[in-house]
Image (cartoon, rainbow, N blue to C red):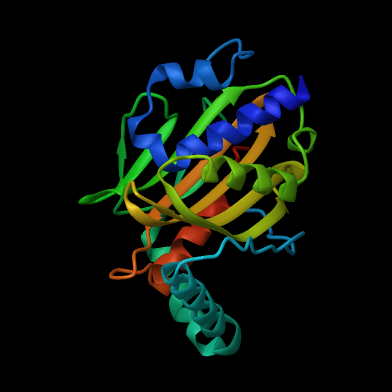
Length: 249
């Protein structure tokens, strides 16, 4: 049963990252056949693992790695830039809480909430619907996320699912992490690059947790093409969104 539900988690996360805006209400039932019905900021812990998957990557993915390096350099080695970057983040984010489903998250204030079948909540960037933040909530029979497996195990399976898609050209894991949420809640976080024939290069930030017998999945999808790469400030904002995903008090 655990193995079956774990498989459902991986399929759901993978599907959400690339097809959330086209999801239907039937997807939830297909991905979760055992489901019975639809369904203060945490400190970030040190990464439990940080693994790069070597897949004979294209030059585009190598350029993405360089962008990541430069962003890290600005943040870690030029501390005078931090206040300005943090101020920019705070001014662009507002808290969204779904009391009914029991989760909370920060959302860019300029992004618009839209209704899409299959998504519990979906937010899109103005004039750029392919850049979106989606949350899906579904009932599960497990009590904790750890019963699905370790963060690295889930990340490996997630990338395997991406590679099996005919549209996938290249994919690379950037980070795999675990942090504690509300009341010590176990939250897994992933970042990876996806080069696909459907939309080109994308940056994916994902998070998952289980609370009150519900599985909460977050996927942040943003275009990261060579001609218009994800800039450091926007990246920091999306990371803040990722880290803010939590169970509502």
